[in-house]
Length: 404
Image (tube, rainbow, N blue to C red; front, side, top):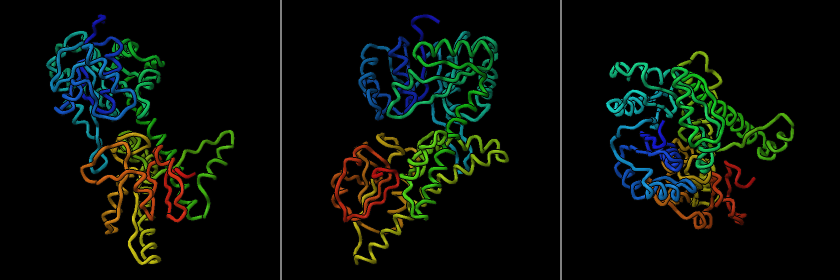
């Protein structure tokens, strides 16, 4: 690979954009592609359309020095990275149509010696399917280009550091493809690069998030049990974790985001008879959001009966996790929608300090909402909420440990 390596990133979202920026900052000439014209225009102005600490400054740098340019169509490159969403259908079936569409878009540009990498979370066998698609359409490239799978494993809010320092699992369709992909990622990854095959790399990504989902499900189920038993779940977990071999996670109002809330279904879909615990964990974490919704509705009813009036209710946070703006698969957003639909009140205040506006919810400043509210439901443990004090007369429903 030459020093002026050209890489085409298909998808400039929460993972594609940071990865493209990091690669550009490490000497790769990056051409980023997105179907959203507004996203393309924003990036070419040296700005970003997502919230991620430190990313805006880095984006401005690589755009101004010419290392990163965004467009709506791919250009001929040396490396092609597929970093598009892989949603699931209403039947919890994975949808790889975006991966296929991105692959078809770059196929006319492919040439001998090129490296094609899927980073999108995918069902096991997706890399092989795309390989078949490419070679069926471009049979002259069979055995002459490299194809691999390399999933990301980053934490929103710390993406810049983790893209560089986290280990990566890289699996090619053959040994040469694996080695070529490892060489590419060595340009900007300081973590260890673990070589395997494509199917194992695909399953590894799904396994990591399914494991975390199961651990969260245990904590969420425990919180429901403790509520019924009259036990403080936060104190209980702190004490149980004093055991040298116990590490229980913190419960919340469910599980959201485009990884943990989605990836386990990829395994369940392909292995429905075998993935019993994985499926059960998904159901528990989905149920926790419903349970929180019912707790809030019941508290509203109790307030009406005891006070003879409708309460002012603050729903604190609608992102899927603390201190980010990402609302994908957010259980907090689900809870807010369901409570507002069923309670029939005018006194709801929706709070999300990480976004300026929302197409459905009218947002309220977190301090104002807390001050005015009769009932405060903490749905996401944003740092701002931990600074709120007083309000002993308020009803506090803490589903995420803000007051633990």
